[in-house]
Image (cartoon, rainbow, N blue to C red; front, side, top):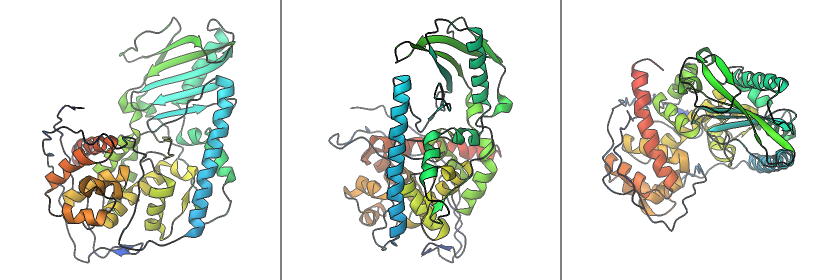
Length: 437
């Protein structure tokens, strides 16, 4: 299928300033200080179609495979056993919760990478925030109401205000599946890393406009200072029940808390010798700044960390041995950024280190964050062997590497991902230079 040609703005992509003698988790940087400048370079204009062999599967399961094919990786059977048990617990609790919700609502809706969805303690209230479109809804399951009574109005307004004033800690504590998983993981076990989600607002509430509730039916959301909240009664999927719903739309500046994350993000990115602009671009592409993001894999939080893969690599890098990252750890924005930046470091400085051109390696790091180093290799040699691919990559210019990635990566999702992240980096690099973030 022919896809429109896209000329992208590339970022200031060299990610790193290498410090002298840096040794963690069994690999060492050179003692020669190597200053890398952040060059702003436009990507090559892609004048050819993005389409490739359509016989290959287009569903990228975001493998985040971190395979070092020359060094023998350390074995931690106790951790691997716990990770396997963790995965089974996740599946069991998700299935049990889905069954319960389907019985009550007649359907099951769950969170995704860019849409946070939660239920009340009694499961009669469903809240949804789409971090990509800004659409917010609060739904209350009722028995046989045909109109919005005064008591229902008060409940709708209360729940809407409660949602908009929620903190990351509130959201985590109301996540029944995560709470059940935490309760089933062994206590006082140093293999498991737990955390405390921050008591910071989910949204930039200081930019939140005054709400005006409209009970006369849906109308276009007002662009005035007062945000219109529309309310209605609609049919539910269960017999003899209806749903009272409020909907509104939040501005991007309310959803994206770049300024709130700026200090800690810059600190962690610099510690891992990774460009903060890249970290912002990854967060935007992975979750659209949704701290409660959870994909079906599952991957958690702002940087969509998969505990069994990226989490394992990052924790070896940080602590010298792998740890099992519980939901409470990954739903902490600070911890999530910590793990995400560490994983970017592992990709750039360890698994892709045989690529000599830093700009090429930066492109490869972006692709590998989404699909794993071995899948990146397939774009160049059609084999899952990155060390062999590196030999070919080292004979190519960075422009040629970029073109190959956006045309030949085995998954359409990853090809689009490389474009999206590199374009976003340019935006955040400019903000960084202007001291906005």
